[in-house]
Image 1 (cartoon, rainbow, N blue to C red):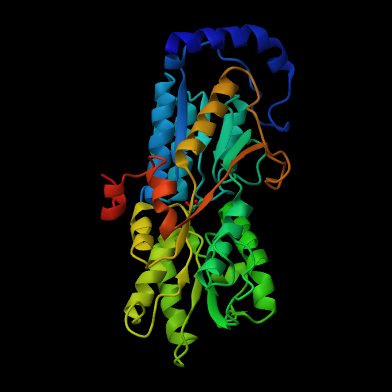
Image 2: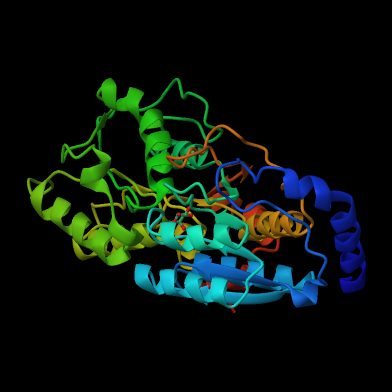
Amino acid sequence: MNKRFALVAVGAALALGLSACGGEGAGGGGAATPSANSAAPEDLTIGVAMPTQTSERWIADGDNVKSQLEEAGYQVDLQFANDDIPTQQQQLDQMISGGADVLIVAAIDGTALGTQLESAASQNIPVISYDRLIRDSENVNFYVSFDNYKVGVQQATSVLVGLGLLNADGSENPSAPAGPFNIELFAGSLDDNNAGFFFNGAVDTLKPFIDNGTLVVKSGQTEIAQVATLRWSQEEAQRRMENLLTGTYNDGSTVNAVLSPYDGISRGIITALQNNGYGSGSKPYPIISGQDAEIASVKLINDGVQYATIFKDTRLLAEQAVTAAQSFLQGQEPEANDTETYDNGVKVVPSYLLDSTIVYKDNITAALVDSGYYTQAEVDAGQTS
Ligand code: GAL
């Protein structure tokens, strides 16, 4: 495998070296210009910067990227930054000074890495933005992610299905209940480009139901700045839900649905609800959405506490990141399937976007177990083994 890749790399170097050297980097601008690297994979190092290990999702992403790169023969420098921006900046500085040949970066704050990316570009190190778009820099070569607007549409769809306003297949339900239903909205971290995409997709989907009075945002908090959750923090989400329950819902009214953009946030919301008496007696849990199919939340869905999540297969995302890294090392532009959507403020970053799936209680097995993402035992236990 290593030898085969080395040959391919050498061939690519010969075939493409000339044009790659003269060509523009992905998306042009000041980004690193791909040039074939004739070194054997084992002599090449890929720096992988992940945001945090407090979320199981990023641990899985880190593991998947690392193991797939290692399988292809590369050296891997994988770092997690504890959701601390200076730590991530430092880790990138070290990867660059340590001679990384490609960087794969899931940013904590998408706007905070300009200096690091400039120094990467000056050394012709291609930068792949992983899941979260790095903003305000021309030194981003490629973006691998999911269709994030669609993820938001799916989150809102799952809420509408849970309330019976849409059929399970997402079609209109002619005998839908009239409501009104009280709903509260949560968004992710404003410094993460994805947060706006999720929120816009969701709100566009909920809007007709809000406009005709079927859904009521009782708190009146409908702007993303009012409902955002810094660093996607579970604790912060719990605090905001507690404030909503003691503020807006202290008149005997109940909350019927919560739009949540991420499983960690959903778990914070659920804790606040449980402390307030939801989930027992006359106060059933509201319909709560999520994202990432984190194992603890899959169990909550199985137990009927959370209503749904969005499954984004991190194995496939890792595969795209690895493919893109290999393309750059071979002096080629990675294959993009979207060259319009992800404008980072300076340029449109060529992207490869993957599809996502809504997971309800009744398709946990089909979506997550049959695909080998989790075992049935892990789903039952609510933790990975
Ligand atoms: C986003 C990502 C989501 C979720 C969230 C919190 O950038 O797209 O899937 O993981 O961060 O970690």
